[in-house]
Amino acid sequence: MTPQEALPLLEELRREHGLGEAHHTELQHMTARALTGLARIPEALGKYKELLRLDPDNKAIADDWRRVRAVANKLSEGSDAIMVRNYAKARALYAEGMQVEPDNDCLAALLLSHRAKAFQKQREEAIECEKLLTDAQKEVDEAQAALLAAQRRLIKVPLSPLRSAG
Image (cartoon, rainbow, N blue to C red):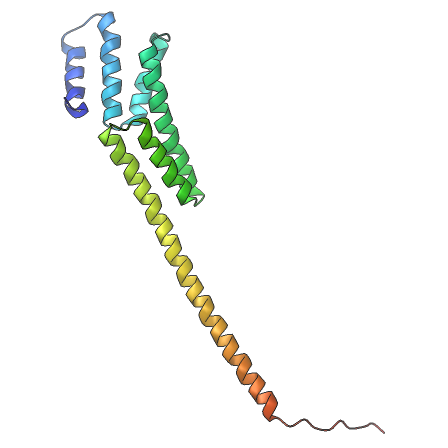
């Protein structure tokens, strides 16, 4: 069953079947896992925080929360890297995020889209740099041509003898 299919079923179980408190934590944990599977990271983190508040000693919940938090951190750090135009670092962070949950296709798609966006921005920056370099080279060529023309004019102008004052 996919996370997309599981989420409505879990909600229905919680709402309509009035399962007891023992099952409540388990259902909420499954919901958090389904949200993670759908790459709905902020919602999943909220569920895990709530679950840890209710059951702080639950190792499975704590482990899942740490993994989801690690992915959230990679997403956040990648966004920060893009803001300062460090696109290579952003791409590396997104790739690291994919290693945290390697079997999560939705999460991989999210991270790959962010990674592609970082690559596109880096590519646009490289194209802009190439354009600036080409423009600068044209200016250098024009300046060299003007200098050469000025030197040729100076060579053609006869030097007038110095007049002595007196």
